[in-house]
Image (tube, rainbow, N blue to C red; front, side, top):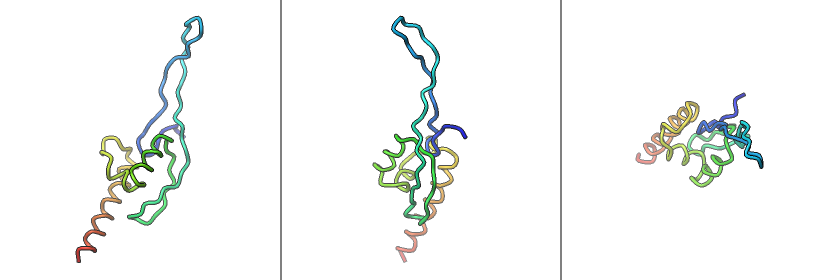
Amino acid sequence: MSRTCDLLGTGPMSGHNVSHSNIKTKRRFEVNLCNVTLRSDTLGQDYKLRIAAKTLRTVDFKGGLDGFLLGTKNHKLTPKAKKLKKAVAAGTASLEAAAAE
């Protein structure tokens, strides 16, 4: 299982440990991944995702999974998130059509 975020694709970065004598050794900065279940209000379903803690804060700020997906540009999302976004957009359109009648 790769250590990447399911929504934004954030992965590990590389850098250096720097000692007191300025000797540099390679290291990896791992992503703080959390296993969460997010609810889509439009679709009425729960989704189990493995996302970064930073992304989880953004999802909360945007008002949930639906608000996050609809407010994020496609080029920033993973293929799994794009598929979810397409389903949420279709669900939103059908709800608006039903409300207009």
